[in-house]
Structures are given as structure tokens and as C-alpha cells.
Image (cartoon, rainbow, N blue to C red; front, side, top):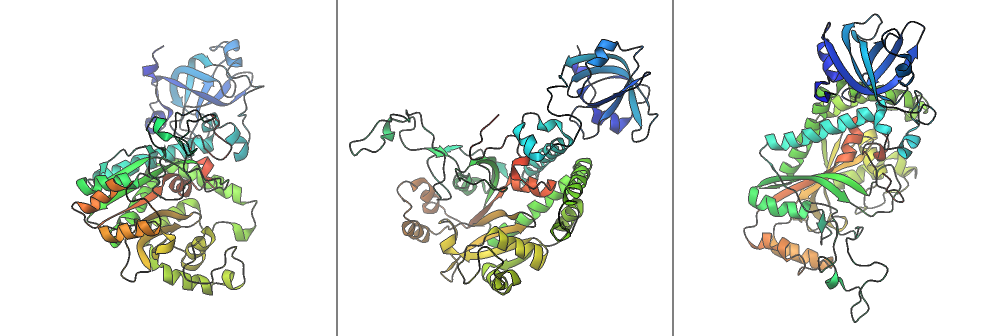
Length: 483
């Protein structure tokens, strides 16, 4: 069958090898026929553009052409010729067509019409065959490649931190348990509690919520590292911003303070956006047009002020605004939505935990630029963040994006043993279980920093997709572990 002789549609469109005999393989998007000829639009996923195959019924048997229905998979051999129609420079005159896989047109759910995103989530095993999801996942691939390229080119080392762990880096307790015990009848200790000594790891274990703590261990030996892997939160949330399984990018750097950390994060985000703008032009243009079409049904005041590509360029080309949490609170307290009680969570005093509506107000209404917020109250941040000299705040940093809210969270880490231990004791975090983490402060401690970027939120921002479930191939959410 010579599958290795296949030519990708992207290659043909890049090179236009007029006169060459080639073999294409792909899936039928549409077919239209008249008495003299059939026109088959073929797509192989290499590019958003379909490629036109011209099939003469005097050359291709009628029974074969009947099977060339939407969704069918074909192998087509023919000659590349200049296109007679508009919109494409070349097309393929078919000499032979082999149907590799049929698709019953009465049952195939992806017909050539517009399907809702909700419907496509129900058939996530097929939705990548649509233009929208083909574009999203090609962009996702490009961004994932750019992540590794960025850090590799900067001399960072890629560390694979554990997916199964006994620690909860965020302290939220929203973890998925990992066990081999019979959950219907687990072994019990004398006090009636589950006897985890009989479990596989001989202790409680869970799926990781973050690779940060282990990442710190590596950074305090290799200087600059990053992790990029799946993380899990058992948060019972059905919003457009939350997943139970998602991917996190977490660099950790020795010899970086809070300002170094913010500089790296801003540079990293701009690099990713520029990489997508350079390498995903066709897909981004399609997604921009999809978004414009979607927004036609919205009231004018709810439509985006910028087109997708314009917004990406704006973020990539402008410095992010940097303000402290304290400055942000004052802006929010004086804001019209707060004074007119339009915020769901009113800002009344310093110490409030900012919600998405506050973050988006700062970015979209007040500054109209991405914002780096620093120096949060220590009471609303994690135990490992470095305490500032005022005793009230920590050297934390969140980066806020339009349409998304928080996209990066990070901090300078607390490298001082006594302050870290006292903060852990305040929060009832058992220091004896975290002995390994404390050893890094005990032996050769140094100032160090890091941050986490939720990869799906980044893909959401770059593609303009409104729901985080539409930027991961098989979303895991409450009540949904299909496919």
C-alpha cells in the first residue's frame, strides 16, 4: 500500500508540484457531483485547508465514488494540475481512489453543517475532524513545542516530577486519592481509621496538584529547571475555567528574586504568543473569523474591542503593567462597579481575595493591558511564599490577562528556614512529613523563585475559545470521564 509514499496536503500547498504524480490520504469533508465529474474536498489534518480532488467517473468506478461520503477515509493517487476554479492554485486529478474506511452518511454525526460546541463535546472522539478543533489542537501543539524550545534555549533543564505524590502543594485538600485498597471494605486500624500501612505505598497518596515542591528540589541543584505535565484538582466546579485534569508549566529558578521571576514570566508569555503568531497564521485567522461570527449574536457592548490576532499582537508588543495588591485594592474600591454594587464580591477592605471579576476589571477596563500584581497579603497565599519585610505581605506575583483573569501565579520562595517553619506551624502543615522539603533550606539554601502557567488557559487565550473544555482533547470535569 506504500503509506510512506503519502504526501501531506500542507506540503502540496507549500510547494504546488504541478505535473507531479502523488498519493494523498485523508478524510472527506464534502463531495459534490455533476454528470461529468465529482469534486471531493479532502483533509488530512496537516493544515486547516482542504485539498480538492477531481474524480472523473470514466476513470473512477461508480461504486467507489458512492463510498466517498463525508467522513470516509481515502487514498487518492493522481496528478497535480493547476486549478480551474478560484480559491486554490492546484488540485489533484484522480487516477485511482481506494476507500480505506467507509462512513455511513446516515450515521456519521459530523455532516457539512455548523455544529454547536456543546454537541461536539459529546462526540469529543470525533471533534478534532472539524475545522475549529483541528485549528485549536494544531495551535496547542505549537505552543507546547514553544514551551520546550523557550526553556531549552535558555539553558533550563526539563524535570519530570511525580504524578503520584504524598504532598498537597496547594494545601487545598482537593486531591484525587490513589489506592489499591478495596474501597468497599478497606482494612482498619484499631481506632477505626483506614490502615494505609496495608496500601501499595504504605501511606496515603494522591494525584499531584503541582510539580512545584519537587521542582524546587531540582532547582536547588541544577539552578534552572522546568516541569510540564498533568496536574489534578478534585474541585467540584463546572465553570468554563476549570478542569479536573490539566497541564501545568512550572519553572523554578535558583538565584532569582521576585523581580527576576516577573521578568521571566512576562518574557515567556510574549515568546509563546509570538511563536503562535509566526507559526499558526492560517489557524489563527480561521479562529479569529469564527470568533467574529460567534460575537454577531452578542450585544455590541459585550463584543471584544479587538480582533483575536490584534489582541495577541497587542499583548506581545506592550509592557505589562506592574502594581502591588495594595494599589489594586484602592483602584477596585473606587471603581464604578464596586461603588454601584455591580461586583458579585464587593471590595470593602484590604485583605480581600481577588476574584476573576476584579482581575478582569483591572485588565480589561482600568489598564486595558495585562497586569502583574505583586505583594499579596500572606494570609491568602501559600505557606512557601517569601515573607516581605512589612510582616503582612509576601513576594507573590499573579499575571492577569484579558478574558482569562489569572494566567500565571508565582512567587519568590521562602528560603529562610526559621520563617518557613513558623509559617508551616501557623497553618498546621506537618513539618515532620515535609522533612525533605525543609532539607533544602537546611543545607545550602539560597534565594529562589518560580511560577506556574496553566497551559489550557494559555491555549484558551491564544485561540480565543471561550470554554476551557474546548482546548484539551478529552476534558475531565465533574461527572465526565468519557473517552
